[in-house]
Length: 456
Image (tube, rainbow, N blue to C red):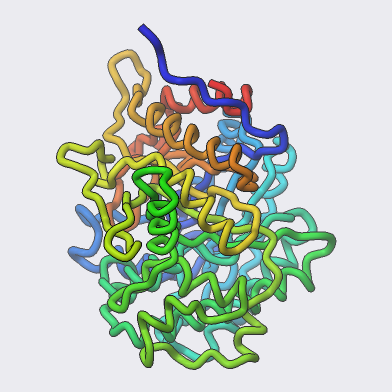
């Protein structure tokens, strides 16, 4: 009887990390001057979040970050991706700065550096200031400059120590789900024309934010962002199937914004994607040459969040034909299909188009974990999931894709947005009643994997 196939070691400079987001773990939502975000309002609206859960306490990371850093250290993390709560440092989104909020991130970054954990800072992970939302939010023409002003405050305080930055996490979600389907905060259902205008403002905000980071952070910085990776992967290695999968990965669809190229072509290639022009036509707002110059600031890496993908083959005329994954295909608790090849082909196709080094900024699975009678948390599904996906990622690296690191989502169970505390993604189990942290079996497996550079 044989065990799982061994994963070959990753390069020596490959970074092993884990990721979190401010609203999902910090708690302390009404403490030390923090202002309200759209997620505070959304959680307070009956029926919006599963069983009325909120992020008021979450994992209480705001008070317990020192212990969480010790857990990172014991895990052997080389890098940690976290986000800043905009309203913790600018309670009204603009204007008066809250010193206590900045002090918290000061202490967090210092603690990470003392533990020899490299901080990767995400400026925006969905918790938009309510005051700015009430002024028009991402539809307001001044929203890019609001973000730039916020970025300047963060850069001025943390830029002497943080070298790795991401402007936005998953704009497809906070625009598409927050303003399109209404399933996330702020819970709106806007027409696609307005969503595209918001997308343009987010892209301008990214460009202005990148300019601020380069000009106001002392020393060299690395800048990227972390959109959703919408991946189609070929069912075979036949050239026709690979071409079809690449075309599908680059495609846009008229009725939603969940794609790669609408978002990334302007900020990396300085153009509106031809796929976007074909899909949206006159719905697209005007992108002036000046706009594109602002958006297309030099990028050092492409961060991408990949959880699943869609298998395709070449159909008639070489067009992509979706292949059903099949009845009974393995799924996570979120009912997402488990599709390991997405972590091979997604980075490959994105690198081919954008020619940037790639970080996997999120990958993981939700599982129904609990503390067993022996006091441990046994999550063999997460171990198997991660091993299978990393095996595919190693193939991409072996094929010449410059994948620089992997951030497991998530370090700990946390507030999973509209799903509340139902979904558990963490390497560390959270008892939300007592705030007790219990490392899961996957935590120790990932620790050993890091020690062996992926060779397990």
